[in-house]
Figure 1: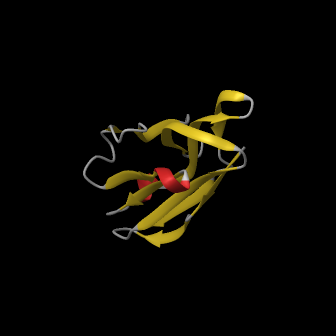
Figure 2: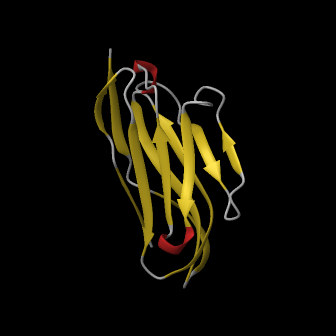
Length: 118
């Protein structure tokens, strides 16, 4: 099982980006999915998470600007990021609890860099 994240890049302050992350391999089901981020010299922090039934938890620092969603048929989670600021600059990682041939395990994606210029 692999989590493949994409969608990062360079954007000006006030702009938008959408990240996506798909679970691939022998996947029987995907439970909680989440996005974390890690800025330079800072700890990794939770940005948003969504359960398999769609219950969402959004960090206060991005509430109202970021939206998390998922497509269960494609085992994919999305993060729509609007009104970006330089403080959102970080490597964004997806995370998911996946049920596969080896049971239920937690996986991390490889990270995708988001850079917001002022």
